Image 1 (cartoon, rainbow, N blue to C red):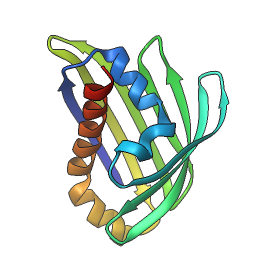
Image 2: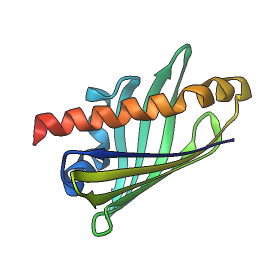
Image 3: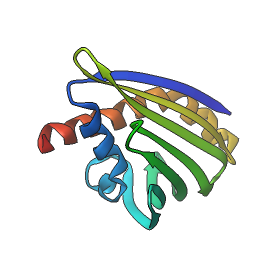
Length: 142
């Protein structure tokens, strides 16, 4: 089991970063390791999405149920199908002096414990790179 909390301040508005993170269909265009991204259903602020991810020699599709809260600027993603026992990610986007404080809480329990061990050593770096991808996308769009 992996539990990680990651925080970073970005020089953008909370709403702009929230909008980029909630725009799942475009992930594969700018996030390294994301080879496909598709929203398969949407009912209000509830989304089901499939991400195709590749890391080292491992790859697979992950289906998630995503709950968007544009008023609170939060996103909760719960894994519902993929190579895991459980995965839960909570994002929040709060005002900060220099922009937005991005806060990510991730709990992950993979089926493959060897890969989980490898991932555990590198997950903070991977999350940092993903957040950087969102920041660079915001730099282009805003």
